[in-house]
Image (tube, rainbow, N blue to C red):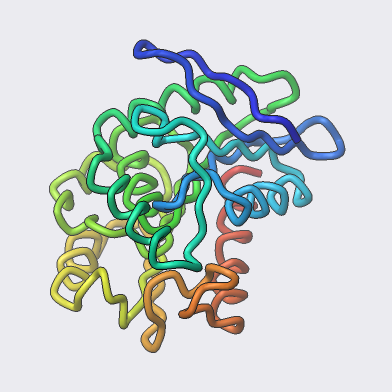
Amino acid sequence: MPDLSIQSPDGSFSAYLATPASGKGPAIVVIQEIFGVNANLRAIADKYAEAGYFAIAPDLFWRQEPGVQITDQTEAEWQKAFQLYQGFNEVKGVEDLATTLTFIRQYPGVTGKVGCVGFCLGGKLSYLMSTRTDIDASVSYYGVGIDKDVAEVSAITKPLLLHIAGKDGFVPPEAQNIIKEAVAGNFLVDVHVYPERDHAFTRIGGKHYHDEDAKLAHGRTAAFFEKNLG
């Protein structure tokens, strides 16, 4: 499916949109990792479309390099990904996601509610979407840096699902404990920990991919969206 253009106060950026066969349904904003809106992310969006959702994946690195698509298969690509991550403006990124949220809510065929799902960098941004916007449901896969913004937990007004890798090389045990303690007792937040998994255990082709736990996490996400987006 072709990319489309979204206008923001700072300029226009592209987004990949996958649409359900029915032409109608709720929507999900699919939030990138540090590799851009690459083939892996587009495949995730396609799967959500197959499940009956409009799935839109905006290019959040457009201020640095519009349209970047890299993989996790070479050292050079990893270095570029980390450079883009270090140059990323988180506040602007959330603003772009909020603009995407408004865009997809008004898109022809989108009915009812809109959720978001993000991985790695996107996992952090999914959390921030739940604290800074009126998104209807958010899912975070191994979000990096959530522990730095747990003061925002009190702003959560819609359901949030957190998938945490117990042996995440980018989210040490201390950070995981800060997150779990911050959301404890909040009935809007569900937390699932995968004790033996490392970062990106659901990324197909990644060195930490684990099929059984990836399917478990995705199954929980599917049920969560079905319940909260209907």
